[in-house]
Image (cartoon, rainbow, N blue to C red; front, side, top):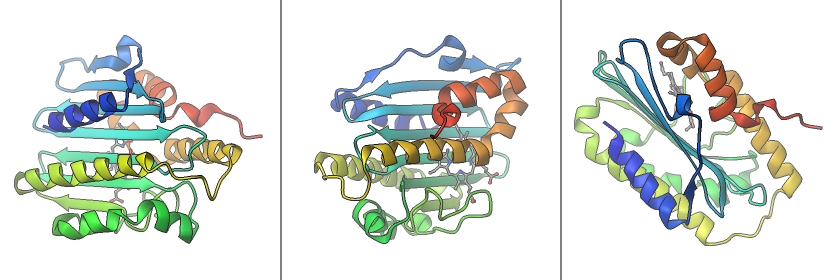
Amino acid sequence: MFDSLVDFLKTNIDELNGHELQISNEFKEHHNKDSKYIIKNWLFSSPEYRKWRITRLDGGKNIQVFNTVAYPNFDSELPILGADILWFGTAKKLLAILDYQPLIQENKYLEKYCSSLGMIKKKYSAFDNNKMKNIYDSKKYFSPWVIICRGNKLNLDRDLNDVFHAFINNYLNLNKSNPVNQFLNLEEIKINQIKYDKYSFEKDPADKLFKSFFGEKWTKKFINKFLFTLNNEIIL
Ligand SMILES: C=CC1=C(C)/C(=C/c2[nH]c(/C=C3N=C(/C=C4\NC(=O)C(C)=C4C=C)C(C)=C\3CCC(=O)O)c(CCC(=O)O)c2C)NC1=O
């Protein structure tokens, strides 16, 4: 499940002249004791994106996860692309969150870089939702058009693929249009990307899940050295 999303991304990153970066074996593929939970990770970089990571967790019938984050270079004020797609098998629940995660909440910035999500979600009624529970603050690094779907994956398979493809294509087109920075300078962009990692580190509910499957030690390393690497940066 979700492997086609990984393949789709890899093809697109390839077309951006992206290259895969080496990551340590324990992150590349890691199994829990009885191999019921297997996590795989990929890390890429391209001329326009300093870091693009992909995570797949295969927990068989219990849980399936696809997670990806693309960080533009520090000289681009474009939003960070974020997608978190989870299938909870026992409850038969899909949770999909897709967003062009804004570096600032200024209306003109949001309108310029994030509002096209509105056109995508309008086409797919199951994804036309932006109501979050209280894990994250919807005004911090989320756009007003964040795409959220909570539903039964069995009948959403096609739509999920279509939405994801539109979500990626549209984001890449934003970059291809080569917009001139209008809101942030290089220093501010860097600070906001650091703050994004710090905020995500603080709020991400995934750590409980990883700790229960893979233990405390591995999880701590994974979060600091793969997921949110800027968390340890000091903002002067
Ligand atoms: C590999 C890492 C990784 C995993 C496995 C992960 C899982 C994860 N994300 C969650 C929620 C969530 N995840 C997000 C959003 C995001 N989360 C993101 O990692 C990104 C990039 C976005 C942005 C699009 C939000 C908004 C929620 C809460 C959903 C809600 O409010 O209902 C939850 C709680 C689900 C629940 O019980 O309701 C888990 C377990 N998060 C991770 O980072």
